[in-house]
Image (cartoon, rainbow, N blue to C red; front, side, top):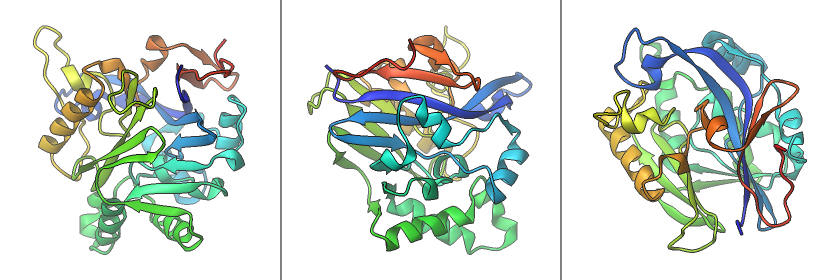
Length: 292
């Protein structure tokens, strides 16, 4: 039986997102829906999230409007679909510092946050550069870095320096330096608790947007094609993608990109009254399904 119940919760979306950003290179191939989401894990006497989403106010709203985000709903409403309130969340793993992944720290008053040291260090550096270098801070809200520092002041921020096993029970993190962001990381959940796990899921952050990043668009000639947005290198993204797939035992569907709209077709899911998808990845002992 699984140690953690796991859900991917959509909280907003870009309905028409360029495919050329999801996969580097294919121009004039149209658009896809890009869900915005985060991951909820419940088990081992913890309520864990992977990323926080953002708060639809101030610069967070300005960024969302600029990117064409629609149908935003806050975490209190979204988490309630799984019987959770923001105050119940004990731990949050931040994959990277973009606004839609780290922009709601202040809405989780009892959580401890985990983020790569390199991510915070390099964002502070990039923000110190002139405006001509602003591409290097695109997608980020400087106020979120301040909120992370405030969490540190209250003893609720833990920085991670590279790879670390058992950050939380059965949960490992891996640094993917200089890829999508300076210190992006992915999260591996060994959901049977075993070191040589036979029930592993890898949560990709934005290291991939879609399972097509593993194969390209030609199934007869597969190749790893990185996402089209990086402050690091495309080579690093390719090797990070290969590492995630290896950690998942070579099973694409066990690497979970929250921006992949097809999650709902591969796992049990339902559409809420707010027209947001709940995708149920795993159920622990005694847990009630949230999609039936």
